[in-house]
Length: 488
Image 1 (tube, rainbow, N blue to C red):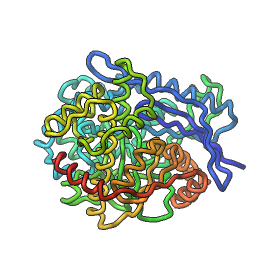
Image 2 (image 1 turned 45 degrees about the vertical axis):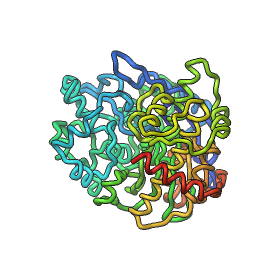
Image 3 (image 1 turned 30 degrees about the horizontal axis):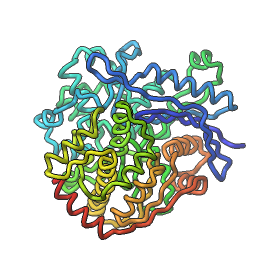
Image 4 (image 1 turned 90 degrees about the vertical axis):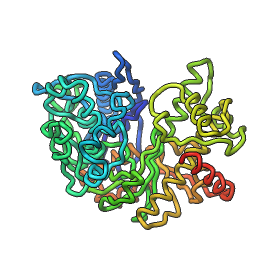
């Protein structure tokens, strides 16, 4: 009898619910619900609309029940963000969005108490201003009354799981995004957290990816008219769900989960933490079966998405296909940006910030839509080249191909440019890697799939992939030298 599970996947701008069915050979998927995920700015703070999103979770469960019996539920989301739960089990306020400005400048301030080198040696996590530890430090500094009321923090997938089951946990993969987990011992680095004035008692026990969180509560079942099923703590961080679904048959492989963010890296058995990886600011994120996602977080399709929003808000009517055509019609290698420049994190007028970056770095200033799009595409492709070169230095391994997974695989221009810039064969797909990884972890938790190797083989024969080969690599190598000068 086929196993049927419900995967609910939250991205930064939308969410969807997909039923995965496994017949013993292949996984088939069916989308049953899709919804937008719109942050809301109130009183100068940018929040996630958690109550509405929880409504969409319940809608997903109701619609799944109409399709027939499901055997379990798993939820994955973006990383770092969390909700505060008081001693009565109530949500104190809506979770704050990682793009809020409340953590600006706090990395430097925290380093005065816990030096960056010590922090990295323990956690192995890339320094990013919005990491959970800096969000909590911001609360301690500016809104201490909230922390005083809080009993526990729950990361986003665990927060949804809590209101479905009544049980609290900190799933391993999502916990590591906080920059508060000891990478070697795989427990909370409580002493570091305490030195920053944050109480370790706020942190729930860490549970392995694939653990059963609990059963769907009686209240939820009564409200929705459904039967109770297990809720599985899948790899709650969407990057690790996607990494679980990379259809590679090799032990050593390079991947890029490409969406709003680009996560470029490889998978290791143990964390790789040394002076070199610290200098390069590479992250060691926890994954399924205690694996390590050794990767860099890169601002990705956000640059295109937010630019399109800006142009369309101001009278444009551009589709993504239109923007790709505009880029192709523009002169190549005219100017570059560093996609990870802090200027590009917050929502707003990305095109003008690109012009400002190019002006202050003494480059041609792009004016037209096409010039700006060409700049974004080429800068992303060259950033990927730079990142994989650093990863190969750190691991001492060469990766002749890159598996690109996620929504970015639909952007054929970016895939082609990445092949040309890196000089590597690109294998693009599956598009729904995050959902497939979510489904696979549920099936492994239930014993329907033996292990990750088997899961990747099954996903490989269940999904189609596309291939892109390098072209005109000499021109891209020359552009890379110019790019390195600009971003330095």
